[in-house]
Each structure stands twice: as structure tokens, then as C-alpha cells.
Image 1 (cartoon, rainbow, N blue to C red):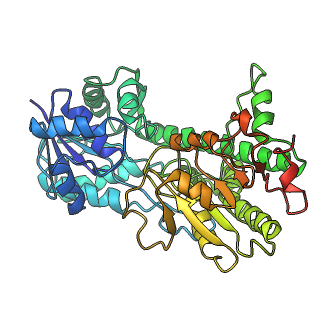
Image 2 (cartoon, helix red, strand yellow):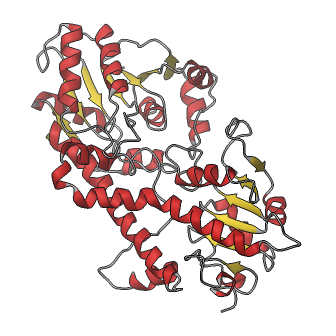
Length: 441
């Protein structure tokens, strides 16, 4: 049985380790976060993902996956570590590759002749070769002679990771032909999708192009929604009808772009090609500015609610994660919005409801937090819907006729029976009579 060492047991690494263990490999998981290691060792998943608990329990109990804070020798090393921003406050953000290079040094300690190292982390173009050269230097082994390195970027959607690890097509970029062939043999053992072979730089750029494409399209949807709202047009209705055209497929607008992929990866191209990435920079600016627009709209709406019997309106934010039905707060625009509104509590009361986060996961952020949907909605004067969690569809059962609802994700759009039961604030510009935009149609 071949041995695989997975370096980094986060949102990508842990599911990948599980799938690999289910498909005929002895898998060793390595992570520097010892609290995470302790949980996984007890078959407790540190992340929320559909089906992960039972799968993790099975591979742990059958000793197909063992985890440790020390890296283990293996035939194949698979690296899935984060690549965050190095300087997130700068105009052009740069990748922090310290985790990638730290992984290279750890692997070098146990690397032997014939090993294959696969970098799955999303990285700027040229990083895989730099990563490989560092392993060569630290280990004393010869690249593409004694050991082999390739880049195979992950292509999965949180919430569907186990399905997509198997079904999605994969792109493999080996530093040499042997690296590509060895990597293809590995992925062919569990991937049902097509596997395409290319060079390392092309593989790196493919992943960046994919996520930049999505960021561009989301920016268009967000900008279109601002145009529509400014003239009282429902952006979700607008997009639904525009998409009736056979060659049009506009994405859904929201409160911004978060997570560790779409909001991050375009910067790797912008960093490398600052003069030839004007459209990417514009898209990033549009998506990054959306939270500020929403905050302004909420403040305008609150000002209109204030009256003698409601001196401090109660504002409820529904959803904090970066996308629906996950527990991931990384780069979440909803969290940014909630944090800023929470700092303005002298103007209004503020609370949040986030059903996908455990009781202690928001500690230290200072939020008043509800755990019961009905109680939170009953409490609120203004309901700000930021994330389209499945649990929030229960809002259709509540009488909201005395509430103001700002829906930034289209949750209520298809709940037509609500139209006469609440006041929908499009949050246009503070000048429109927000109580009459949809509720009284």
C-alpha cells in the first residue's frame, strides 16, 4: 500500500486526505495546529462539510488516516496550505507564501529518492518551481532525477467538496514529464473527471484565470444591482429576465466576495501583471467596495425608522459566513459589514444570527448573538439578510409587515407570498421612500 502524506489539514487538505484514504492509500496527515490534530485524532472534524463526520470516523477507526504534528515519510506528499495576503492594506496585494515554503522545508526533512511532491495550494505563477528548488536545496536531492514535483490546483466548492474531488476535471502541471505521469497515476485512482497534462506555469495560471473570471462576473452582477436599485428596479428580477436570453448567464449579486479563492486569486495575477490587469483591478475594487455601500444603506434606513416610540431601532444581521451553509468566515464581506455596524451601536441596537457557527466561534467579536431564528426576527425592527443560508428560508413563515427588510442576497425574491407582508428596503441612496419599493407593489 502506497503512503501519502497530506501537509495542511484545512478545508481542502482534510477532505483530500479522507478521499485518498478511502481509495487504497495509507494516509498521514500533518498540520502545525495541534488543537486541530487533537480533534481529527478523535474523529471530530474541525470544519463543516457535507458528509465529513462519518467519512472521517471511518478512515480514523480503520487506521487508514493517522494525523500528527510531525511530518511522516511517504511515497507522495500533497501540500494544501493557505496562501493569504502578505500586506492586505496595500493597493496591490501580494501573496504570503511562507506556509508553502515552510511546507517545502518540512518535506525536505523526510524526502527520499523517488518521492513525488504535489502542490495543490493556489499560488502565483512561478511558485511551483521556486517551491521545488527550495526542496532540492534543503534535501540535497536532485529535482526531476531523485524526486519529482508538480502543481495540481484544487477545484472544489465548499459544501460539495467530496463530490467534486472525485467528479471534477483536473489540470496537472509537472516540472518534468515524469512528474506529470506520476501525478496522473495518483489522481486517476480516485478522480472520475478528465485529467489534463500541461506544464507547471500553465497549471498555476489556469487556476488564477478560473477564479478571476468568476470575480469579474460577480463584479458585473454587483454593479448591475447598484444601477437597478438606483432607479427602483429589483436586481434579482432584472437578472432573472436577462438570463432568459440563450447566451446570457449573469451571476447573482451579493454583499461582496469572500473566502480564500475568488477574492484572493485575482491579486496574484494583478501582482504579476499590474499594467495588463486593469479589468481585474476594477472588479476587485467593485466587489471590495460593496460592503461599504450596504453599510451606508443600512444607516440611511435606520435614520428613517427612528421615531419617538423607536428611538434606537433594533437591527438584525442574518448570516456572517462568506457563502451559504458553511462555517467559513475567511474574508467574509458579511462579517465585515456586521463588525462595522456593531461599532455604531450608539445609533441602534445590533445583533447577529449565524446558524452555522458554534457557540464559541464568535467569541471576542462583541456581537449580541441570537441562536433562535424566530426570537431574533421578533426582536428586530430592521432585518439585513446577508447570506442565503438554507435555514433562513423559514422567514416565509413569519409575519414581517412591521419590519423593514434589506435583502442583499435574493433570499426573499422567490417568496412571492411575502410581498404584502414586509417592507423591502432596496437601500438605494437614502432619498427614495424605501417602504414602498416592493412591499406595496
